[in-house]
Structure formats: structure tokens, C-alpha cells
Image (cartoon, rainbow, N blue to C red; front, side, top):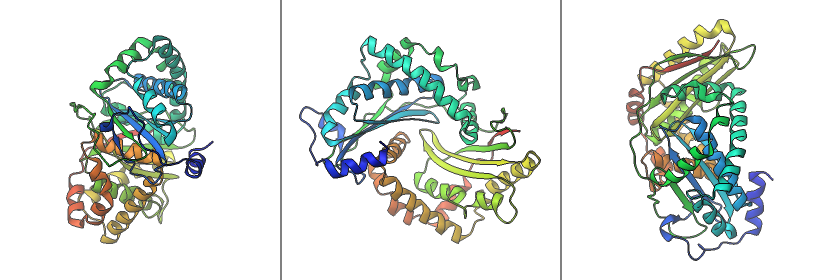
Length: 382
């Protein structure tokens, strides 16, 4: 059953119910999405000191154990720059079961941990295998590992197989010192969840040039990656300015009147340590110098605020549309809120995003663009 089918079935059959007795009221808040017949949770770990392979095994072991304790829950593991997490969605009647499953993460039985880690090792190797065959994801993670000062060997498919159960058990016990846990009940007044203990995250290293093995046999892939301020309002507009459809600046630069690339993608994403901006292209090997020059010219053009008011207005409309699309999907909503909270913003501010985007002026956005870093990390698969 797909997530869409599950949400539709729950919408037709589940009833609105309150928080089960015995649940801590300070950890519950009304879901900000339309599916109020569902309960959900998202757990995020700011993790600049945990190797990527351990992050993969850790989160996938949680997924396995929670799916055993709450079979009806939908579990979505994810990883990003300096952070990883797990998003969980369940029907309203399974709220208590879901909460009890989450509560066992920090203190798992030894036998359950061994089984979960054994499953997670192989699942993590499969995840890395899928990343290797997606050129954008593959190059993106090379840039992320360079920024987080982790070796590229973390992307080897045999690396997760070397993670021990003792290491995962130690990380699970340490979860209360670094974890953000947001729990949504079907009903109840909105309340902030302040379960994230703020900790210092190292600054990211940007400005390197990396050459990796080509993930596809015939095309050259290139990625240009940097870190911006963590302003989520201006960042959501920048995401659409660079990569919002065929009218976006990066697509027009590479696929407009003179096509230079087969694929042109761009995105901006909020992370625990700032905004992540990436420009990606796949082209013929002889076009790589042109792609490199186009990326640097475009970043400089945006940094100087040399884009039209029409492009800015279009990006604002698309940012609003993307936000409403996110609200229609509980998994994406929980994921967005976790990143928002990890970056130091409140849930109330997230709920006010539409009006803040509409109120964003061209001058304020140009000021945000002017702070774009001059240096970028280039990852090339020639």
C-alpha cells in the first residue's frame, strides 16, 4: 500500500480521537497538516560527529524496530547535511502504540538491538548502492562529506557492514542529549516541543574541488554546492528562483535557447547548520568548461541582485505553491518542521510562512542574495 492510499483509507475510516491517557501532554501538539485523523512523530539528530555509515545503520535500525512494535506505522528514514532522522505516521487509534515504540529507542533489549542492527547493515548498504546510481545524489553526498570533514570512504557499500551493534547501542543511549523529537497527536492545542538540547555544530568547509568516478558511462556530471544563511523565508524563494521548473534561472541558463546540458537541477534546503544550495548538471564532456563558467556567472549575477522583478514574483508564487503541496503530505510536513526546528526556528514561525513569503520585499531578498558565499564546492564526475 502506498502512502497516498494509506492516507486516503485513513481519511475514510479513522475517527478523530484525543491523546490516550498516560501520554505526556507537554510533548503533544496539533498536527499542522490537514490529516487530523493521523498521529505522527519526527526524530532528528544533529550529527556532525557521527560517521555517515553509522548514521545510516542507526536510523535504519530504528525503522526496523519501530515497524516491529507498531506494524501499522509508516516509517521514512532520511539523511541530510549534519543531520539524520526518522519520520513516522500512524492512524489515530495507534497513537499510544506508536508513542510506546518510540520510547523504547533509547533503552532497547539486547536481542532486539542485535536483530535490528543486522537488518540495518544490509539495508544501509542497499541505500548507498541506490545513491551511487543517482548522479545528483551521488555528487551531492561527496560535497556534504567534504563540508562535514568526513572521508569519502563512508560512501563505500561495505562500510555499514563494519558498524557494530555496540556502537549503535551507545548512540541510542546518547539520544536524549542531542535529539529533537516532535510528537503530533490527533487533537490538542498547538504547543512548542522543546526537546532539542542545543549543541554547537562545526562550521561547514566550502570551496574545494572534487573529482569522483563517473556514475553514468556517457555523460559528465557536475555539482556546485555552497552554504547560505539559514533564513527559511528567503531561502524558499531562492529555491524556486534557481530551480523552480523550466522558467528557473539555472534551467534557462543551460536548457534555454542554446541547450548545453541534458539535465539541469537546482535546490535550496534548510539544514541544522544553514541553507544548502546546489546546482547540478549532466552534459557531454566537452561542455563541462561551459557549465562551470555558467554556474559561477549565475551565482555572481544573483549575488549582485541582477534578476528581474518578474523572476522574483514568480519565485514567490512557486514558494507558496510548494508550501501548500508540503502541507498536503504529512510525511513532508513533519520532515520540514524538523529541519525548521533544528535550524533554530519555531513551529509558529513555520505556520506563518505563507504570509511571510508574501510580505518578502525585493530589497530584503536582494540583501539575502548579497550574502551568498563567493566560494563554492565543485564536484565533477568527468
